[in-house]
Length: 214
Image (cartoon, rainbow, N blue to C red):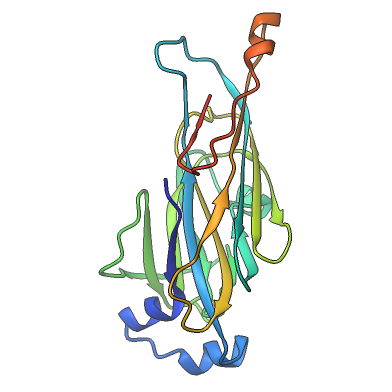
């Protein structure tokens, strides 16, 4: 799916939480926190027998004067999640992401529609917002590379990978930035049981960010 950028300040305004002063105190008046929601679904080649997928990657590089703040999923999410469980990731006004206990939920924020996810107002002291989605128990290697890049390497653990995998990260951009642009290059690796399978297991990356052939 195409990544979607959402202003954290705008989310606060939608639930009547006036956090402009808190955001400015955390980041300075020149910076704006942004939530970037995205995801990846590996598709099997049309007309071919499905093969198992053991790994896939999703690096995204945002252009301009931006800085990555946080990203999910990461290894800490695996510690709290179960297979096919809906998990809530806390979202702070400055862009922090976390999975603390005690994220008491309020109503879903109106006016924001995301595929496979919902954004809620929260009563937590640190995280006043959260994004919830169904998480598959996977091995995840994730981190920031450079000022505006987040990268995920996802590997098969107990569950199949050929389903939608939600990915989120937050960043700061200059105030009044009209849009966020970037580049996504994905990769997919299939299980290779025979030499023929191994020769064909190198998938071509899809620079559009909408998915990659499996």
